[in-house]
Image 1 (tube, one colour):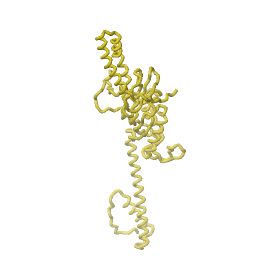
Image 2 (cartoon, one colour; image 1 turned 90 degrees about the vertical axis):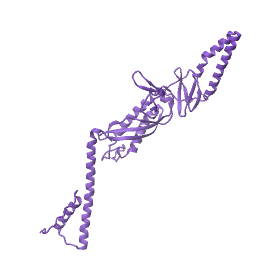
Image 3 (cartoon, helix red, strand yellow; image 1 turned 30 degrees about the horizontal axis):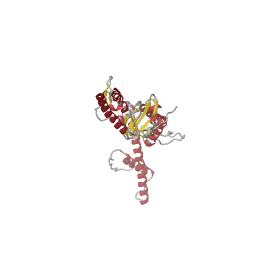
Image 4 (spheres, one colour; image 1 turned 180 degrees about the vertical axis):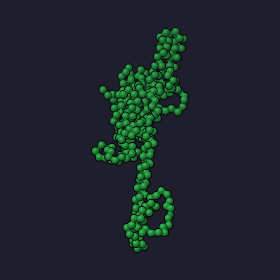
Length: 336
């Protein structure tokens, strides 16, 4: 059965409870002194009893910063969630629950700037003091998973990295519906990237359907980055909605061919660029030759038969389409 989030109201009385507890401790000291002076065993026992158990009420004090939450349980039963900034007091026997508190994924909320407050585990790993906090951040977090090698729709291996902006929407679902909502999100990001990237070619390719409508289109990973990122976002959101998470945005941060085929694909792109350039040069040269012949005919500058026209066209195309400067040759003879 799904757990619904229940926000605790009226618990922002931490300052009042702290003041009363301290005042009672001061009163207990005076009561103890008075009881000892008057040899009143009852007053002495009452003062000592408060001194021994009065600190328990201080365990119910909780301090939250803006956009922080605390999920509380009492003997295994979900009590509610504290939200908002302030000084709160709850049942001292309530415990905070957050299974993802010590999980470090290299995301924005898990990166600490200093070296202070660190604890070294027995296996040599370092855990910061924040790992012991059970508070849940309600801020927009950025998860940047490592690069993945995925085959596109044509089977070419490409490397992709995605940055996902997310936040906790329902604290109860986040901590009770999944074992660890951070690891769950990271796994869903990886699978979503694979599911979406394999639909697209790296570059625009003929006869490829990327939208699922049965018709070929010009969608590609390199040319349709925004569309691909939105599909990845929707894919992740559909998987993490039951975990109480909201995907704010997703962006592709790295996209390239895998190293083993990068050189071959670069040569292919260079060859395609050369062919396109040559095609443009030939189209321009043919147009210039046609223009030259038309102008010569209009002005009757010279009468050319078919053989002379063919020779002229050949010479002009060689000059215009060649990679090197033309070498002029003086023809003192005749074609006939």
